[in-house]
Length: 396
Length: 196
Image (cartoon, rainbow over all chains, first blue to last red; front, top):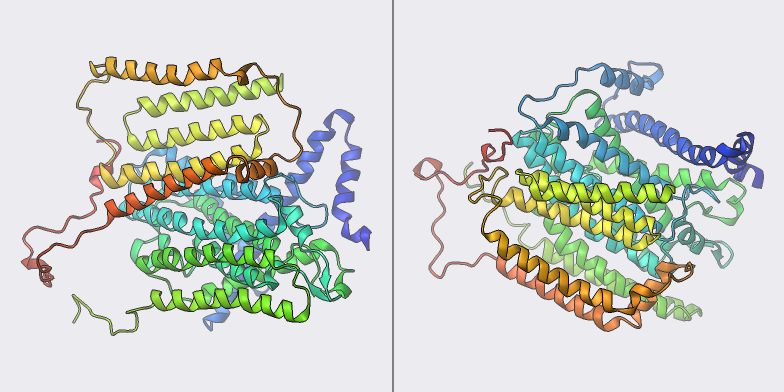
């Protein structure tokens, strides 16, 4: 059981041991990096086809079904197409920045994977301030989007980039604020320690994941909404809203650079899903004690895959927001709720010695009631005036 | 030795991008170069094993301040501004005097303080926790003062940005575009071109 659990770790140690003495540290580094790149590169290929299949199913059509069995070799065909396509750089564009933008977007996102714990003892770098590193690595992508939009010298690109920046700045605030309660409760910025804090089972069977507390549930919801917006996915895909801006900041990109943007977008989604699993869904811990015989990395990837499936589902279901609705949602709803969640977390923390049944119920009622009341009130104020019939200025 | 090579690489990168940020004509390039300089400073912090400060520097400066700079450049003046005064001008004398005074007022206390002659403390086990504890106990007053200052700045920015409603009744909305003699101000891409 432990053998299967630690199979990747022990394989790595064995391989490092094979290398000559001088190269062992280098081999150790390479053997941490290459599996991450291979696994999530592979995830990228599989997710593109699963997403197209899933969207097709939701929209009552087949999706890609020509290349290979059930169309599952489509990513290979897409990859070859992207690599062999002509790389068009607009004459007026800023050549250097046009070239640099996809690189600046993709490289920092790979860095973010280095602090995620994929299983027991399976983390590339255990930073003392790991979660801060994660957000710092994600911060560079905003500049890359701006560089892409500005260097293209195209008004659609520039408008897309401005939208993307406004959106990313606005949603970074609730994203980080909804992660802070986890740090408060776990008492650490290191991601493996946050996973460790969710170990064990209450009453012998109930998992102690953060999502099963009032503040954790609220935080998980806020985190998912903000994460969807951060990774520019529907219903928050205004930066590339094709009905208004052609393809936003991607308008002037083709061939392999476009593929890099695509890769960066999916990797950002994977990284943030991995963080959501780590922060709220117990990381690599099994949901029930009797299921603990399955390896830890298996549980991480099960939770990870279900989050990705949820994102695909949301993309197929929700219509796109308008720009003002997008910003209102962030600043008037998510941010106040996230700040209140900090307070509720503090209440939860200081009432942690109410362990009797009645005490537990009172604790839940108090914290959950505060959050539910705020949710209803903020939601009412946000949707005030939205139910009235719409007035068209130019199209009566 | 490798740490020195790394230090001089990061320091050189920081200095070169800072100089580029000051001398380049195109304001967007200046903003991006200053982002590179911020990143270089973050790398130096990391090399000094100040993880928390390094990551915070990167998150705040590259992730927010640099974005704010380019945002402001794009929203206000466009990118190619013809300089109205020569770079070397009489204003420089005042500038040099002020810069010298500021430098002196910072460097004199630094050189007079005992901190400079202190030997480096032994490696601390968990610096992030220590930062948190010190901030919440010993430095709680400066922390609160900074929080108050930032709140004041935030409210001030909102007040400045708030659109004041005119005292008279609001003008009737123009429903027909053709009646409007002066076209509505539109987003002008030509002002954003790099090469003219």
